[in-house]
Image (tube, rainbow, N blue to C red; front, top):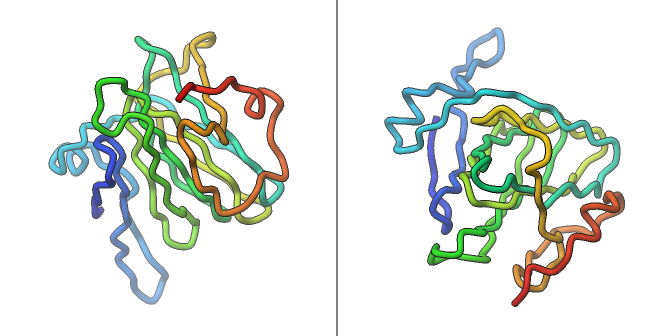
Length: 176
């Protein structure tokens, strides 16, 4: 795996290193030792799948409130998304800044999103499946969110949402 830092500490792009032969290809998706050696201790405790039927489906921006904050590794296993993380850590030099990258099943790229970040994505193709590996077991009642188009973050989405839940569309402004 190849780890590339972003401009937000705690958000890392993880690219696969494929080994190919006449049968096809093989790549390791996660190895705790490789992550730790790269300075990103991450050990998944739970794996979830988000199935999205239509291009333009927006999910987010979600996070878990402390002390239930979680890190997650997000990867597309079918289709393509634009994936976004927003820094919500008040003491961070990148507070309220966002970073985004395209993830697709074709390239296997993943985004490691650390604690204290809101996360969301918009699908760029119909029938897109997103795999989440999460470092904590989900505990109901601690989920929070910020609105996908909150001017405090000024996220530049590549397309406008065609499908969005009422909850995600109506989170209050985070404040400027």
